[in-house]
Image (cartoon, rainbow, N blue to C red; front, side, top):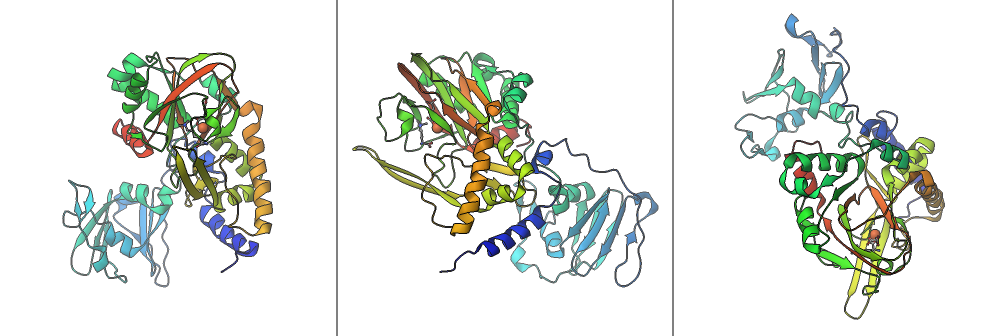
Length: 433
Ligand SMILES: C[N+](C)(C)CCCC[C@H](N)C(=O)O
Ligand SMILES: O=C(O)CCC(=O)C(=O)O
Ligand SMILES: [Fe+2]
């Protein structure tokens, strides 16, 4: 078996750093100031060798290009793009290559010559035209290329977000949706989803305190994700399941189902009843904490993003036997722009660490400690007391939840939602997700 030395790990990291060196920090990116691209710069003329900057008619002075040996270099609107020739052929949107009705590729990529080059190039004000050796002509919108090239993509966040501590969240005065309007008006749903996407939490008020109404409110947003806990659950401190959630004990901040290969995307809570004290809900923005780690100690951020660890759920109850294992790093980032898209943080359910050598383990614990310190800062904690009628949606890939210990009868119902379908609903309403 190959042992992963720290040196090797470091070189892998150096490589990722290289790829990820885009802007400085990920969330200055993800906070996404609608990313205006720099203004059009004057065209450059460069000659010599086989590198020749080509200019098209004077009216398209904002665009220049050259056929390099290894790629097509296009300079448009101040963005220099390096477009692979096979990629260009593969992304032809002509009627024979692409079905615009189904938005599916018709072209058989397996038949594209890997050494393909265009035989003719032309650029006008809006488009690039390439003629291929078989005579086929591809037209690309210059704006489309800007948006879809690697260079264009890495400048944008996949998901605009507002990272928060309790002060930021409270002073934003994010409105809650109201049950009546939420169920009948798509504008209300849209503004709810907009807040949810920006902050990773959102509330619906005035919901009837029943399981059925809770189910209806969630179905407005997405498809319920059934798990071994059931579809819509309604639990109390009866230890009916082999997990601390089913007690009166306090629960430190965590994300749920870290032991799934794909942790549940959204968690919904509705407290139907509480006759007693305590039991407040704690919410912490995991991405805000990750951003702090990145700013202070990028090597630690990188360890948390690169080292895969396991989480495990082992339940041995007479009528419930489960064994789940989920593997993945604490921070999941898109490698092209370093944007965090999922945090897996559950110290209760974290399994034995046995996939990394001791020197990495040591550093990993230091990095994990730093993240924990950030997550535990009182100023990052948002405490809410869930009351009957108030339904809370939590982005379980981003915002950690916990609870205060409590006394008395407390009944909490809710469910998990399929993340893809929440984002699908958001996109169908015109939101970026
Ligand atoms: C929400 N519900 C009570 C159904 C399940 C709780 C799951 C608890 C588990 N330790 C985890 O963090 O995933
Ligand atoms: O009881 C609560 O408020 C939440 C418990 C919990 O963490 C969970 O059910 O996932
Ligand atoms: Fe939980």
